[in-house]
Length: 197
Image 1 (cartoon, rainbow, N blue to C red):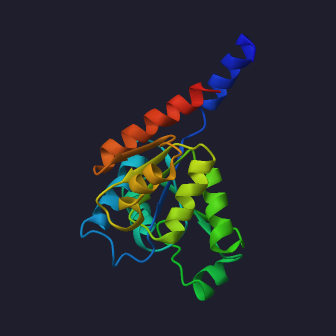
Image 2 (image 1 turned 45 degrees about the vertical axis):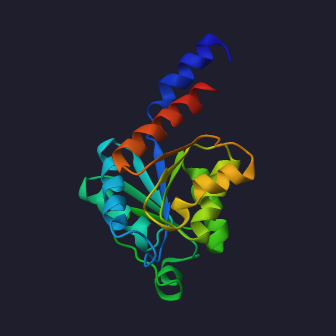
């Protein structure tokens, strides 16, 4: 890339807001007692830093992150597994509140997960089940910055061990039990990732 091209790229790239995906358990009975509050705090922090929150347009931790982002005046975009708003509400029984817009992918859950993580600049895992693990591994395989909010239960509390036992290294994954610190660490990885281009 020439110096002129690099300058133009940097100039125009900064006009794009960072898009941060919050991935997590839609059903939170197995999550830690303070998980929903931490998810809401994460959403607020994302909004306060003028970033866009992406979710799977679902219940549980992503829903609470959306609620937190909206309480701080943030922009929230959801990616639904359904092909229409009617199917989203009636068939999948998913909410539409706390989202500025919802993309109806029509690709069921696994296809939605891939589109969601591809659309994000980074993916943050809070609690979770198997679908959350799917979103994490999709982002990890794509070389995206990923953050794991530990002590929230479920998948989030197993990812460190999974990475150690998988013998692939930690990639661009960072860990913390504090939402604000985790977002800071994730954004450091995002900036490093951008500099590599």
